[in-house]
Image 1 (tube, rainbow, N blue to C red):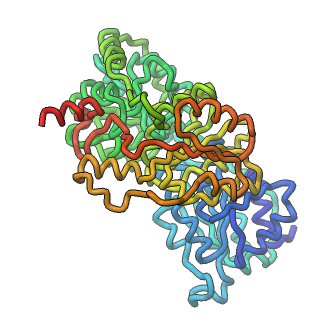
Image 2: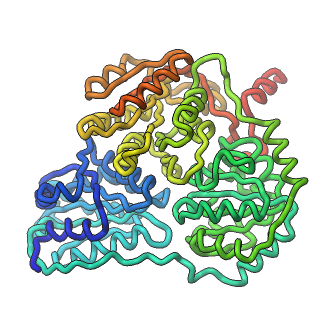
Length: 563
């Protein structure tokens, strides 16, 4: 049947099972928005306060549901405002399709009003970017975009459509979405056998889990694998929830702000099995000494990640779930009692700790876990609060921590929380923010109230850029260059002005009743949680140092006393 390009866009979204899109209209994309109006009973559109918020919301929707997130924007600044959100999704391998519209074909390339080559701009931060100039190419391009976004290593795809292609007519016929097969064609028998031999020889194995285990839906296979190998488990920010955070074999996060148990045990291990992780610099510390006593097996779907940051001894290229199924089927049961006893004793002796005298971020996270039974979806911004959310809330299910791990995007979390709540209406969704991050995209509180999306925004308000200040304190002689936010901004009044409920917490005893009330309200809520400016995240590995150089507050005190 003959349809306009705009009708084809909507029909293709329906083909792909899209029920929600996030976006902001404008002149070039008006035809598509007119069609969205006609199909509002089939596709929900969430109008965000800024296009960046739309991209982050699509990202949060995708991370929390496992589906492809969709965002839309008009030409020029509308499209460029999506860029940070697209890059955030790209660095964390999140499936997303961003649909933009451009000026009409006769105006293209003439510096027309609100014209920008967004396909060119987005090329380095997408799996693929398209520009559709002919309406006959529209349906095949959109279908291909969804296939690319969710196949192999997931990621964002941009489709830019010239305006006349949204009004021109073309033949459309329904096509069922392409089935995405698990990537197994590069799994080599020799690599599987070599990995099994290394596991059999290991006396001190350790398993490091990354976001690939979440993307592949490999939680059950990972759990069975850990039990068979009988090894301690650590994870990255992106890997949280793939393995239960309350399990006895779990020893906490690895890296710059990982636990001492994880960092010291990895350094001592003789075999490191890396499951869907890419060896970020925040994880490895000094690459020359990373896992210096261990052979390394890396399981990853993306061949480009092998030997990119860390040289490995064996690599298995393929979908994590499929690889673990093979290993579990071929592997006997191992026991490493002496090693496990040593690591567990270290875990008991070196727990995470914080100052319990006043109101702190860690205390709030512990209370939040207690009240939500560890079942909430937690989104975060980037900084100290992000690390406290990773350290002090235990994630037992995948897709329950939504955080910008690769790009470190301040302003990510609130949009992501809105997307997550939209995709998971029965879940409690909480965004953990710092006051610096909240300022980046706080206008998305208005999005939550406009669309009645009951997210809870907790702002750890220390009146500084906390993580940057921590570095300035420890490594820059306490020269606090432009990191103090000591002004008159009242977050409670701001939130109330945008239609949300708001509370301010200044004491520990206020935390529990306020959290319970915020959850019970089932409405957009902001909690301004006032904490000390000099609270720090510990442990910490100094930049460029070895993982076993991790220090905490007590180590710092001893060092200062020694000086």
